[in-house]
Amino acid sequence: MKDKVIGFLNSAKGAGGVLLAAMMMAFVWVNSPFAASYELIHHAQVSVSIGDYELGKPMISWINEGLMVIFFFLVGLEIKREILTGQLSSLSQIALPAFGAFGGMLVPALVYLYFNQEDQEAMRGWAIPVATDIVLVLALLAVLENRIPLSLKIFLTALAVFDDLGTLIVIAGFYSHGLSALSLVLAGGGLGVLAVLNRFGIFRVRLHLAIGLFIWLAILESGVHATIAGVLIAFLIPISAGDKPILERIEQALAPWVAILVVPIFAFFNSGISISNLTTEKILSPVSVGVIIGLFVGKQVGVMLGVLIAVRLGLSKLPAGCDWYQMYGAAVLTGVGFTMGLFVVGLAFSQAGLILSINLSVIIGSCLSAAMGLAILSARSIALDKADQGNSEKS
Image 1: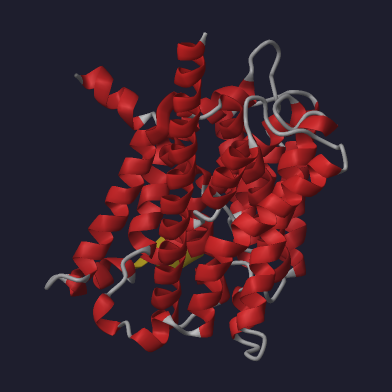
Image 2: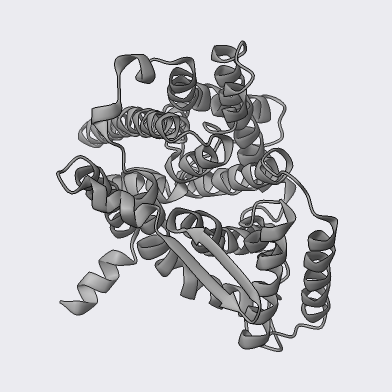
């Protein structure tokens, strides 16, 4: 029984289930008579002292700037592995997901800006609908089990890697503020030490943890969003040390914890939406509409355009065993943008009421994309099964 539970939690279905459970728990709690206790935990001040240095932040900041570093560290490991040895290691493999990801980021951003072009402050949220939540997408695909080609799952994973990389560049370039030259120099020094260790294939857990913590603190004080530290550190983890595959081992050990602990905790602290404060006016505001339409319409249109261009130019082909109907269903699923979307909301805006309404719009857009994407892929699977049965009967 224990092995079955552990196996389920380590699966795509399990990770998605834990994530959805965390979201539902937060939603129910915030809309119950005990809502004040959620807010108390959410904003509780937590301080850490190291000698004379003291760092104090509310709990939500520790989650979004501290705990999520682990998530972005894992993202960085996945990106490095895919580029060096995985699905992104050759031009023919890169073209299709790269074009799809570029279109899937550009079109949603343009859709959002179209609805908010007259509001300078609202335009800060243009990056909210651009990223795909691969954890939830793979959990949704797991529901279909073997009824879709494995190549389609690989394509979506590769596309999400480009999505994440693009979003990280956006976070670093557009959501950083008040840069501190000294802190950036200190962070650069720490990264330089890791680069030397990486060059000689040296990896020591305690040493790398200490240097990583130093880099995180330096970037935290630099004005660049602290989660970028996770990705930079990951890029400087050696592939192997001697005959030991270091990067892959870390990734395999970390992935389950990120899926069933880190991301659900983030979801719990960022999806507590009180419906008592929501109005039709807020839900139909240009910002909310821009996010919903950007995710539900912009993502699928952008991904399909990108894929179509890559195929028409002869740079790539559709994934093996996949047709255009299935590709369209996958494109619709890329509109599931929960984790990164909520993360960018917190970077773009500071008003609590506005953040809650936009968070709801991220959830609405993601749910619409999930429902339509699954319906398309399920219908196509049924149609192909019937066609196969007909051909078998004829023969």
